[in-house]
Image (spheres, helix red, strand yellow):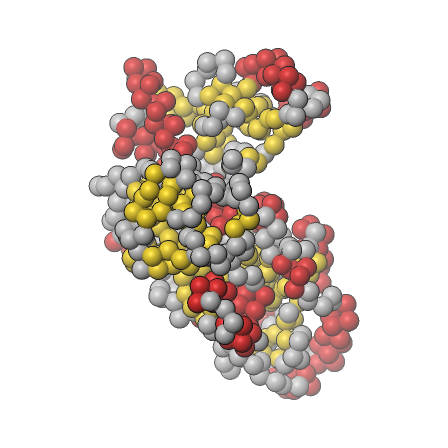
Length: 536
Ligand code: GDP
């Protein structure tokens, strides 16, 4: 359907608009172990991607051959990079932005979600919605990012399927609409029933391949699996059809409804359907808000924003890679673009595309694509690059840290150097730095503990500053603001020892714990406490 629409439309579109329209930039969000890595591998396989499955989360010996990666990555056997995987399928170009998970969960995980147009939520069928998923969905909600649900591990014992849908509806306040429905459960899982076409796709016999579902009669199922009661299956499917809301594209695009796919990433089942669904339903690159106006993706001028900085891909070089999401126009290799924050031009001489662990020079890229731009510290998180008017994109927010620590420096003589280094690290988005107004030593805040390890390793390697971290009297940080300047000033002077400045000089309230935070909040009339700060 999408392909027909695509080719019919493209006749009337400019070449730029055609390229933009076929792009789908998305992320997979899930709780650890739900199957994100397995699904990613299978998506890449389906998409005839540049990488073979198995390369996504290289483990063991393969990891050791990647000697140019940060030591910390090798030691832990995990990936610090947010990689971007680009592949084509049925005429669409998919940009899958990997959201770091497990121990490497960090602010980058959140920030990546500001660079996608849709998200696939992977749920373990036996577990339902888990904590991390909930947190990531909250971030998606900030941008009304449409969510497609993949209920994974249907080949195992699962929770009641109606219960799962109910949980999604209740916990996430999202309407659900199943696109397919599992036939049989656990060991008797036989395949899925396509609710739109009425075909049953079987797990056995090529069912995993995309295309029309193999049409078999429900009554035939029993012959294939004596454990299955065909009339029960038929009744259930009737019930599902009656009970489920029809898919509503607008409601999905506005982030109110999620289409649900059932499958098994491990068995490569339902993955093709999911990919087809992404092509069909997920939006092409959306218009992006800037400080001046909304920027449409098919505008001719190139514009992009930086959502992630990766340093030290090669410890022998101090180069950094800034990951920029193109918001409009076309980027061509060698073009000049203005870095709006400084007003200076940059030559984009070697923009890079990322294919899991590989990189390649990008000759051209379009809105929706993500390119890596090598630089020596010129680019910061949230920066806008453009060859058009001076706009600044809004939308790479800071997230309140979940861990706050005090940096302890062995050599007091190097305090000034540490201050500079921390400033640099926070501009790069490695950690957040809070400077208490009472002059106490700086605090650092992170979302995931690995960020602290990265900070320590980098301060040591790049600035020869051996540091350690101490638990501080504070464990929470919230940005504070008020419409009434006086009120804010009074609050800050009354709470002097609990107020700090962030990297931009914006005030932050530091609290011992939730109880103390709530206690203060209740008494601070007119002050807004926020756990997210939008930039600019
Ligand atoms: P991640 O932590 O979300 O990236 O999860 P992984 O993809 O690493 O999967 C976690 C575990 O679940 C691994 O042992 C996978 O083999 C297993 N797994 C993933 N998908 C499925 C599935 O569809 N069925 C079954 N039975 N196991 C799965």
